[in-house]
Amino acid sequence: MANAISNLFNLGTSRTIRLNTTGDGTGMRYIPLNPFTSDGTRDFWGNLGSIITNAISAIWGWITSWSLTDIWSWIVGTTTFLLNFNWNETDAQVQQQVKTAFLRCAGLLGAETGDILGRLACGALPTATIMVIAPEMGDSIAPGITEKLIEGATKQMLICARGCTQSLLNAGAAWLYGNVKRAIVGSDADFQKKLIAQGIPADKIAQRLEARNKPFTFNMWIQEHLIQNDPNAYTKLFKDQLYQQLGQSCTESGYVVAEHIDNYIHQKNLVTGGDVHTVEVDFDDLGDASVKLLN
Figure 1: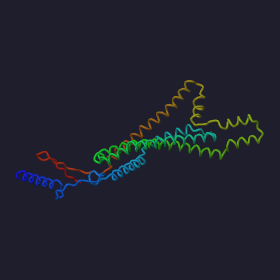
Figure 2: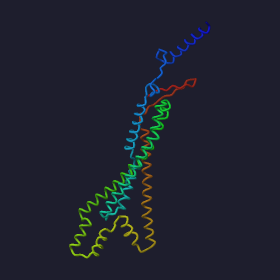
Figure 3: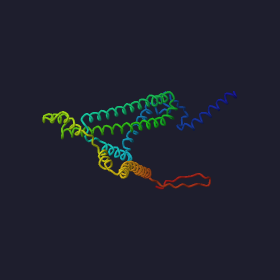
Figure 4: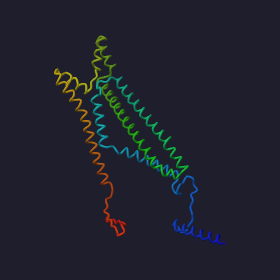
């Protein structure tokens, strides 16, 4: 009898505790039966949707995150291309340059595809499996894993996008210039036919074709006409080193300026990015704090 009364007392105490802790006035225990849920509200597909949403947000953030440093990199790359571009490229050289650009882009796209598949197979898929088998663990580790996977994938995408864009732009410029040049002065085949029709000997035709297709770049012209033709060895070396160091120091200095401007803009955005409120904090005699929003 005493044991029964004790058990009844314990039962009443348990119900009282549940009434006070559940907060719904029923004292009932709720046990989620869906194996895909951890708290009865967030399931596997909700977590997967959150991962996809985070990935899309990261990609969009990368697209809209071009900074002054990125712009300066583009300026440096374009200037280097124009200084070293052969303005007397033959049709065969233009075709080879276009082919090389597409080959480089294909390699970058292959690396990007492999990177994505690797992260999906060995990162996202195991994480999704853990979320199914152990939802509580999955909810705890999935955000950190997702952040790392997206961060790494975004860096690889940036390398691929920049490399492909630069290669295709260079190839496009070479192809466009080749077509414009051919429309104005004609192709090598047309030039050769014209010389044959004029009765010029074959050896002279070969010399004329060689002179016509002699490489010309702004960088070569500067070296030949402003530096190498100087008979004075001292001034020639002085001008050569000046020209080389000018380009290097200008590039480095531009990056320094761009980086500091980017940092300044970033800090200003952090300060003005949200609403500013004034709060008042009061401490009572026991050391407890009370916070009051003033505006």
